[in-house]
Amino acid sequence: MLHRYTVPLTIFGALALAPLLGFGAGHSLSLLARAMILGLGALGLSVLVGGAGLVSLGHAASFGIGAYAVVMLDAAGITDAGVVFPTSVLAAAVFALLTGAVAIRTAGVNFIMITLAFGQMAFFTAASLSAYGGDDGYTLYARTRLFGTKLLENRWFFHYLLLALLVLAWLAGRRLLASRFGRVLRAARENPLRLQALGFSPYPYQLLAYTLAGALGGLAGALLANATEFVAPSFIAWQRSGDLLFMVILGGLGQLHGAVLGALAFVLLEEYLAELTPHWRLIFGPLLVLVALYLKGGLLGLVQRRG
Amino acid sequence: MVEPLLELRGLTKAFGALKVTQDVSLSVLPGEIHAVIGPNGAGKTTLVHQVSGTLAPDAGSIRFNGRDVTGLPLARRARLGLARSFQITAVLPGFSVLENAALAVQARSGSSFRFWRAAATEAALNEAALGALAQVGLQDRAETLAGDLSHGERRQLELAIALAMQPRLLLLDEPLAGAGPEETERLVGILAGLKARYGILLVEHDMAAVFALADRISVLVYGQVIATGTPGEIRTNRQVRDAYLGEDH
Image (cartoon, rainbow over all chains, first blue to last red; front, side, top):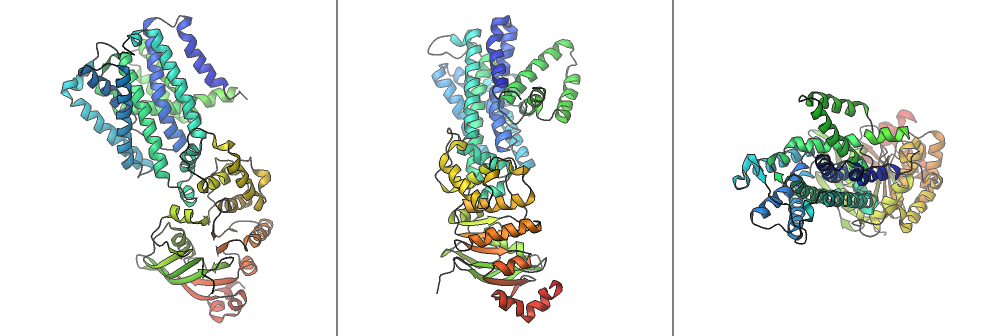
């Protein structure tokens, strides 16, 4: 049996060492940044799916809203992190609260369809924002300023900032799921009727979890806008929501670091397959199907069986 | 005259043309076991659903602890002290036995909107949960996953969860269903021990257990209560014998 911290510490350790081990060439570092940002969003989704049993197919909307908040503030000349990031987080949280208030009244396939529908609404709204590039997207000419400095432009600083946020979110997510609140969430996943018979209404717990995951997605979206210095409606496309869901399942649902592992594996695999052949999706697609079919417990399950 | 803990008056429920509950009135006094028996399809489970709050009656009222709860949902009734067990065991399989009971304690002690402290380390929750487990003789299995319990043990856990809610009334839907002879004996012993402290509405198939435990019995046939009385009265009631008991006794 592996110690329970072995795998997460290995993942975070590898991410901490990567820039020092020659992984620091410009492109690969931004690749890791992308993976960590997606991992941050996938973490929130993992709390929803693996913890609360809420399978959302619209999680990319929170990314998009976080990213578009950066764009809109940028267009208005506001680039201070102290304003930009809280706005992104808050906007995504409010969106999640409002849409979740409707979606969480449903369950199962209906929940998936409603979250998908809200996600698509956000997508088409973004595509129609001609002031911010519409379909073509919007290029940011500078990253958000941190206390008036251009620290976020520094790839090294950005890398370790992302890593720190990822570790913090992982820790907070773990605490959350082990807390009283998390216990109610997990019980709602296992048997909502039993939970009600105990005197709990699952609704407010699930709605709060949905809102928190949205807030984390908003933060990730704001970071993604900074990483790519470009924002487009494709950030919100339902395929991106599907990718996030797949990262969570690829890594392994049971534990939160599975989402981080899944995001890393997903981004690296996508990148290297694309280098191999322009028809990489022909390989990537079946690979995903095989993982879903045969890799019970995801990559974590694989690692732990070996261990 | 003792105020009844639970009082059903004129409860009626139909699914389309099928009347599954017809003008059912009965009461449970504090410290009393009132059993509801009846052949399959008599509407016992529908009655349980209406009392617990998962199904709304078409007509009639349900008073619990001096309060009309007819319109209240399941969770609200549970918070008022009405604990139900499920006919098909509904423990949380991925939770440990202790955590199953601790969640029930948690429902009655303080807010669950607490996000940081690990719930598993809250001594107050665990102690009360262990107490409930001890009442049903399951304390040695506290760390086992509920999904790994035997059928009889799950029935015991089902009871422990209800007890951990510190209820006023236990609504037990066939607590002996599927239990073997030894398990049944053990469960009947546990139920007999609970009798003085809770009102119990017991819906059960096992006649021997019902006649051993109940203070009063109501016989439900085709959604109607055809008789209510002490076990002795029910045993000698001609209508009951014709409709029901005669078949297998």
